[in-house]
Length: 356
Image 1 (spheres, rainbow, N blue to C red):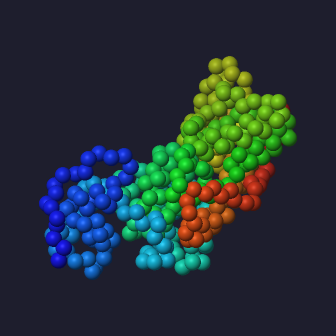
Image 2 (cartoon, rainbow, N blue to C red):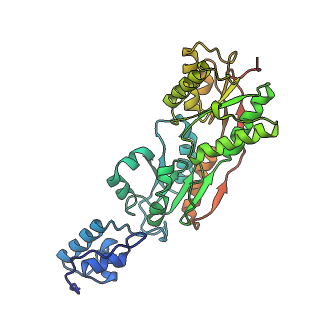
Image 3 (tube, rainbow, N blue to C red):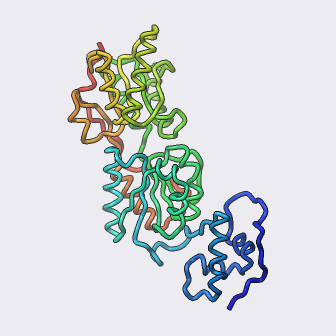
């Protein structure tokens, strides 16, 4: 039986970075090897029940997260992969989920879904998710600043792939898989300019989110090639939702009422934003596309059933989901960036027309 070397009750001094197994062992007064076996659930670990309980309690008190990222997914696996996205109710991510689910099934894995906002709001749920015993790996949506800052914590605990948009900070532990966001809004802008529009506005998500920055870059690049610019007074940033689209239009209408000239076309940061914009513009007695053309990023099945139907560009999210899970299960090293094919595709519909 392995008796404790000392009855330590103090917590190791402050240190930068995550709590190490050695910190737990020192605080619990046991060897690193015993702490490792107990925390990994080894039934053959030779220690008294009280010693085991003290190790587990100490690990929880210090906030220790087992570093299982280096372990093979083919070992003692759960058969589950986590997929965490922003707003599970959104139709935008259906193709991403489908691609991820199909690839997971090909390898006899099941997909467990999680919501970014709920995960960030519940610290205990976050800790449980990355404890290393619930899922064998995680595919998470990037581009939303707060969760991006926690990628390092997740990648240290679980094999991790980030999808949708590159995170703001590089993390060696996580591979990143994403579509060409810049090409998507460049394609929309070129479509609108081809219809004669020379002043184009934007209603999008949070200004500093990586997703918004990339989409804004596509518009700015396309306009600059034609000697035009995206004016500051024609931009609004809010939520990635229909409510965000409605609020964005209300802000723009207030500006127009205060004497700011109105653009002839608006680009929505995503289709949910665009749907909210269509309703808000109608409420302000603006006829689409006669008074304003509207186009959006991320095509969904809903867009063609709107009145007017919403012009949008589709991104290869099915491929993103497929590649993300395939990369995760291949056990590839982190720090890679994978830009997926095929390129974005334009779906021109009733919400865009010739400039008046």
